[in-house]
Length: 421
Ligand SMILES: *Cc1c(COP(=O)(O)O)cnc(C)c1O
Image (cartoon, rainbow, N blue to C red; front, side, top):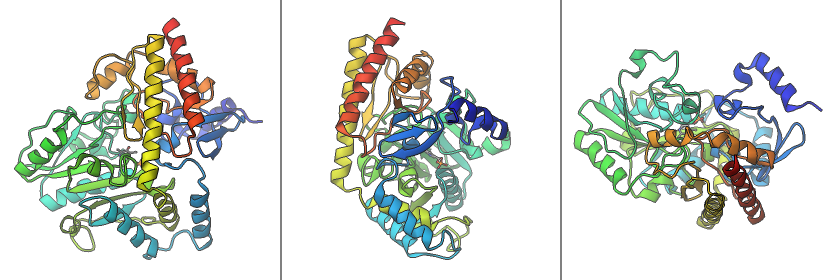
């Protein structure tokens, strides 16, 4: 058997930090990452044969759990017919129709191969459509690793303790303005777009306060800026209509990813017919991709999303509610200062008693140092959460009631240990 230790050693020889995305390297929790051999529903099994109940679920890309049989069959059938053509296919139309049908306000989409590309292209579209330069984003909101949006990016950017990134020029961020979440920024007539995770899920889970999104909408309208909802996490996870339907606030431009690919590399951005008419070849905003609208990704995405009825969303949310309540009770009885915000099927843990309404608050909670021992306590007992204090938990439909109950029991045991330490 090859151990995780040996694999990590080997990986570090050929991959920076041994990984292909920084958060996976365990930098903020210490220790050796487990190398996944396979996934089965709610579980992943590593190369040593350890079985983990998995709340990472590819950071939210898998809403049904790993290797859902319907998704697997759809991908197998698609692969057998060729994996990419460079010509349009029926499933791209079907996926676009489904998204336009489910999300209030979207009439057209353009597919990409990642959420980063989707957000990047949505920003270009907003700039092209308005003829303006400035982008306003919120601290702690992550919009992928595009230069101009990496500033105060939450998620892995936060775990690394980087403000943005080396290699990003001052010119690249000169038109980016960062505002605190849950405070309506004052925009001006140079502002092309206000970008937001309407429900922030890359600084832990931070909900918008009542009226905040409505006021952002009004402020954009006041100066003629576009509002961009980055729904890469919330899209088709909070419910069929994502954060848009949940909040009742409609942006002008959307970015999606994760769930819509059913676990394959994917993203898309969308908007009204009028806004999307700016995208090439209809309009002057260039955007393209060799693998965009990929036949495997559309097969997987459709197979996953077509299973997501309102009943299934309700089922998923119920799991999250039970889990959050159980975790809260466990922390409380152990005497550990913690909060478990939950919204729809998403939840997070902040190790603090103080309210968390923005990135600074989330950082203060991360700095208490409780996350790393909690993470390892859970992992040692067979429960995998994402290895960073700014990540949310992603229960999937494959998580059974027993899985949830065991998670609650284990977390209570780990919390008792934390309190004693
Ligand atoms: C994951 C994520 C992205 C980036 O998507 P990738 O597919 O990793 O490029 C963008 N925005 C949000 C809100 C995300 O959570």
